[in-house]
Image 1 (cartoon, rainbow, N blue to C red):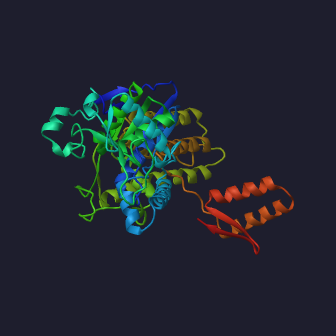
Image 2: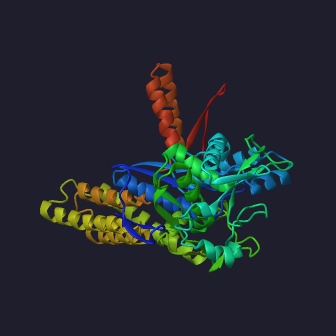
Image 3: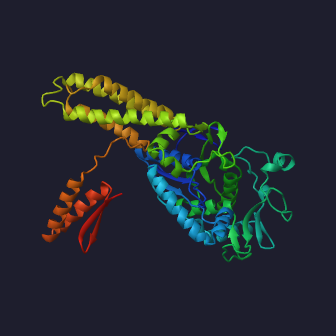
Length: 470
């Protein structure tokens, strides 16, 4: 398996630090509002990378943070007259709802910046002790020039940054020793949340947060660090500087970055009126369509969002779902004596397996989901052309399982769940009540779980058992 490493600007063979295990950190959102579709791209892309690594047999420790202390969160809290904590907790909960709707699996750990302040103070102190950081009136800065390799990820030259591209400088006041030095800790302002530190009551700079959370949950050296390409500079560049100066070893082996998402060929912005939240998209489309759309291009290619492209994604996903549904139907209607020619059946199965290999080849080449989806389409076409009710149910089921399995690696749900009828629900509830009366609590719990899997919630009330659909 080969991955494109932003650090080396080339594809490299993927070799984890520990055989069979992958330590992966993905920068998460700053939670001050509903997530937008730009936030959704890295969530979907790197969830898919994780799924594929697990498909390959790796045990993946996947860490993705929530930045829950930030100027934007404080501004939103002040605007609403509530605490920053209330804002961040509200939007973390909403973010998790949207992630679930996009079939983005929860991370192994979702650390919160505010719960890791002690570790940040400790890392900053280590950097000061080593001479990489300095305190000016309660603000602690990192000495960028003291880290000889600064710029190795973004491939920017420090002197060029200093002399010409002022817009690329990390902002700050004149009290810095060098305009490129960046903040590790800043004193509190009126009305802001703060924590005690040896330098001032205040809060951490943004960059130090990820360095500390990555180290705590994954260790000093990790396999993959990922995020949007807008984070390469300065955020990821600064993470490398802090982590490597503090720990004295390489921070991450492979750096993966997804490209930008544009709306109708223009950058998404509220001022242009082309800003969409995931929640708004969910009012028009099943969010599986959004996921399919996001994976229809290579993650390093810029992606253009438009109504026409979303309609095309909806059609593409429906094509796969129809094939899966059709295979279920012909399997059910195949005769007991179908598939009399075992040799011919084996040949058809081998043909199907060839598309599975094409899928793996695509994903092994820097997670090329566009070509992986193309391989699923080819398998769908092959199945539609070669399978009928004359084939054995075993063969039909095997090919159907391949389509469902490959789709699942991409996080695409292509199997329709049969919705229970009201009468069926009532019958199961009656059976559960009888099981409880007979003290068969295992069966009663099993029925509750079966209904929950179908989105049915049971409410035990004084008037009896009531139920509702999710």
